[in-house]
Each structure stands twice: as C-alpha cells, then as structure tokens.
Image 1 (cartoon, rainbow, N blue to C red):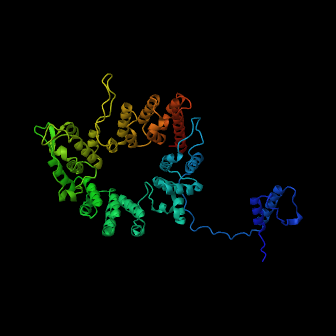
Image 2 (image 1 turned 180 degrees about the vertical axis):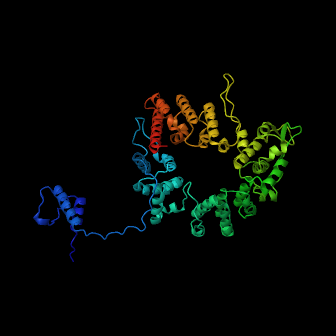
Image 3 (image 1 turned 135 degrees about the vertical axis):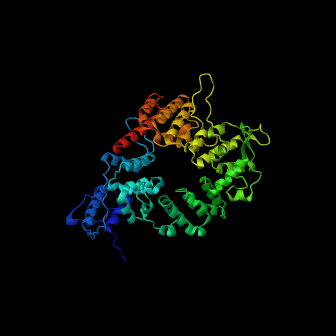
Length: 533
C-alpha cells in the first residue's frame, strides 16, 4: 500500500538531511509558480515559504473563547511608575551579570535584591503591571521568603489567577502583611498537607490565639510525634498563660523532643509553674556568699524524674559533663527576675561578682557555665536588660600604648544577645565592635542587625573593608560579609565605595570587588528612587 507523505514533512526531512543527500521534492506550486532548481538550497527555502503560506491560508478559525466569569476585580492602587516596572522585570528575570551601572562594574546577584524591592513597593501601596503578575507569582512560589510581600503586591489579580492555576494556590493560603483577619475555615487543618496545616495554625494563632489552641487540642492525640513538635512551635505566636495547661500536659508526652519543646515554651512564661520549679532548683544551685562578695555554685547531683519531666535530658547531648549540663539547663530555664529578687543586685552587679565552687570557693570553673546559661535565658525570655549587661558596653579603641582593645564580655553567641536589643542599639554596638575589632568576627553580628544598615554602621563596614584591603587579605576571606553588604549597606555609601575602587590597584581582586559593590549600591539607590522610597 502506498502512503502519500505530507509535503511539509518531506520539506522538513530534506532540510535535515541536506539537499546534497536528498533531492528536492517534486512539489506542485500554486498558480503555476516555479522556483529555480539550479540552486537547491535557495529553492528549498522558497518551497518552504510557499508551503507555509499555503498551510496558514488553509487554517480554519477556532471557536471564540468565552471570557472568564467573573472577571478579575479592579485594583484601586496606583500602578508602578514605568521605570520601576522595568526594574521589576529585570529583577524577576534574575540577571546576575552582564551590565554596568555608572561605569562601576558588574552587578551582584540581582535576585538577592528582589525582597528589598518588593517590601519597598508594598509599603508604597503600588501595584505591578498585569503582565508581570504571573512572573511575580512564579518567583514567590519558588522562594517562600518572598510570598507575603509578593502576594500583597500581586493584589486582587494575583488571587484571581491563583483560583485558576493550581501552581499558584499558595496565594490563597498566604496572608499579606497588614491584611484584615479572614474568617476561619478549618477545612485546611483537617484536609490539607502538613505544611499547609502548619501555616494555617500559625496564621490562626496570630489573629486568635485561643482559637488556634482549641484547634490544635482537637486533633492532638492523633497527630504523629514529628508533627506535634512543629505544631508546638506554632504556639510561639501569641504565647500566653492561657496556653500553660496544654503545655504542662505536653510535658508528659511520649516524645522527648515534644517534652523539651513544651518545657522551653513554658520557661518563656515567667509566671508558669515550670518557671517557678526551675527557679527553686536554680537558687539551690547558685547562691550569694556571705558577705555578698561572690557567688557559690552547687550543680545538681542528679537528674531526678521531676527534672526529666520538666524537659531536662538525663544524658548530655553536647558531650559536656552531666552535672554541668543539668546546671546549665536549670539556670537557662529559670526566670531572670529570680536573681535580682533573691540577691538584691542588678544584672551588672551580679555579672561583676566572682564565681566559686561551693566546695572550693577559690575555683572559678563554673563562671563560664553560669554566664552562658544566663545568656540563653536572656534570649529565650527576650530580656534587654540582661542582654545589655551580658554583652557589656560597646567596645572602645584602646588608649595609645595600652595594648589591645578589650574583648567583648559576652560568652556564647553575642549575635543572639544583640537580637534582643532595639534595632538602633544593635547597629550602634556592632559599628563600635567593627571599628575596634574589624570584620573577622563580625559576620553573625551584622546578620543580627536590621537592613538596610544605618549610615553609621554602613560607614564602619566600608572603613573596615578599606583597612582589610590595605592589609593584603583576599576578598574571599570575607565573602560572607561582602555578600551581606550588597543588599544591606546604606545606598548613600556608594560614593565612598567608588573611591575605594578608584584607589585600588587596577585589575586586582579588590578593585573588582569594590566595583561590583559600588555598582550594586547604585542599582539599589536607583531602584528605591524609582519607587519614591
């Protein structure tokens, strides 16, 4: 049986094989037309052009598509200025190189600047062009940290599209910042995926803590241990004494991780029964020696059943000695108000005291353990007075000839203590630290500071970068800090960075680094100006 081959497929096959390997097809031409077959390649193109016209002319119109009902709701917000809309398109495209800004060199990874742009646009109450909303929803789907601002910016059109595209259903489960509370619909709690249930519980706790607790209680006995653990974390939003009976019952959970999480939450409630029990244990372990010149430490001799129920594992998971482990857990869980109340001393006065062993009062082996436990308590209980005392005053340069600058007082993680302080105080303390100690140990401190950094902190960082470059160090030894500077430095420091780039040996690693940083700062400066921010 002979099968007639589609003329278009014949042309396609000839183009793939080449006219030197396959002769031109003997295709009939409309209206008696002809092609010059002495030049097979040109003739093939002409035949393809004629076949294309024939195929398109013979296409039948498709039935008209009925417009969706109802149409997308109107969005009363003003549209982005044209320059800002173009900037958004660039950011969503995720270009990372290949351009310059004011002659200052290639730019940073622009996708890292998208969160800042979205937050600024949302604060200004602007809406994107409709054509960019799908790309915005795709970007927010891929990066959960963009979702709240991305959904807020997409507005009514984004929610309308989410109903019609399963890939964007996350929009319907995302509450934008400042949005009015929505009526509770607990179907998602009973029918949704685990991540959706966690999100539902978290949002419910934020607007109605009692309703969130009641919902969790309703299914708690049937939840898996690993799920119960994350559901407990959601109780941090709106945590109050009303949650204490539920958390106290969770101390008897069959999962040790659930018990530990419940105990930690209860320890952040200074008036809870667990906090009072820990205060009794802590004051038995630490007492003010007569006549009040130092503190004596008597760590717990054992981890009894009551301590274990209150979330203290009998075996240290850190490799520390068991008594040191029990001691740290007890002091970290006790209300910090316990110490001024029982000693009459302020946090600064307590921290200035020598720490001795109840057996050997000249030993100071427990001093670091006590300070570290107090630091954990300050972070857990969000106590700025204790955090300030543990950090100590902001570092100051040494007097000339007096040797090295004094190291910070804090043990453990100063960055966590910084996070308890107000943003302006965090920035000022970190700027002073960098001015004295440089960038070597500043990465976590900078990460605890609100972005964009204040002008004084930004200036301190730029000055430290200049000193680092002059010292002969390589840029990649400070890659973490440099990555933060691109999105956190105040844009006003662009001029100072450009001066650094101009004053650095051409074609060196630092010249390229400073040029890239200056270009990114100019980019951020322009993007914020376009938004009127």
